[in-house]
Image 1 (cartoon, one colour):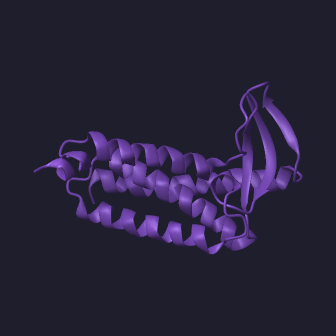
Image 2 (tube, rainbow, N blue to C red; image 1 turned 120 degrees about the vertical axis):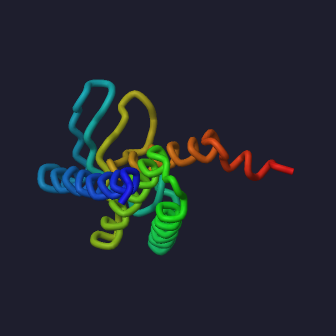
Image 3 (cartoon, helix red, strand yellow; image 1 turned 135 degrees about the vertical axis):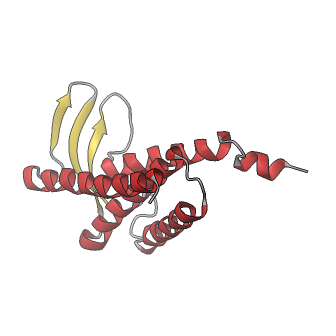
Length: 160
């Protein structure tokens, strides 16, 4: 197995484990709605339940995020084994993206909602979790690779 594929699996497994550990600690030590000021005026720990997807959209539509997670993981698996050589940036981004998607999927399947905890105190922004952060960082990495890599997606689609 190549280094980049090993990196993908390491990030995937470690990311899911980190997400579960943070959520387990939150469930064990906090009450629903409880807020703990972690870094004054910067970061609070706030236990909320999100029954929607990003930013609480599509509340109660449980099948949509499950379908999206399955499609993301299938697309990532195809990319993981079809793109040769697999760049480290892409492998890392896909690992984070899948780890986050699976982390939130576990919540949806076991609880019917996603457990969120991190609240930015200096800006009005939805409470989020480790899995959400991994999805966002992974998406940025994959999009960056698509746009700026040698033989990038943009170059391939604009050739005449």
